[in-house]
Amino acid sequence: MNKAKRELIDKEIVEPFFEQWQNLSAKIYQSHEVRDGQAKSLMEQGIELFERCVVHCSDTSETAVSEREEYEVLPINGKERLQFIKARPGQYACYRQLDELFKELKKRLARLRLKA
Image (cartoon, rainbow, N blue to C red; front, side):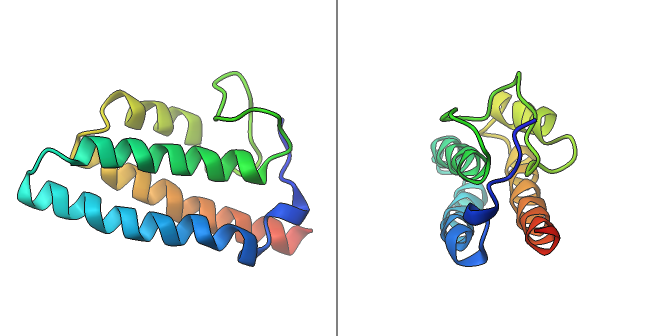
């Protein structure tokens, strides 16, 4: 299991990932609302942002979330849910699922900070 890097899960260090997601999330929501066809590419950016955050916070040399590895920072069923999202990034349900993963990741990192 890839443990969390305690020095890299400080709120000040990880907060930019979540701020970027908030901005991107609003664009994805709007894209779904007006059905302009941009949601899929925006979601791919969101998926990449999520993976960068997970890898950044983990003690690993990987550059993306590996299906073969376990990550302490990932929410419950995180890898399976991420696979679902990657398979259908243009669907609104996948946007909602990615949004939930970001919320759960933020909470998990907060709990890990308290344990440290």
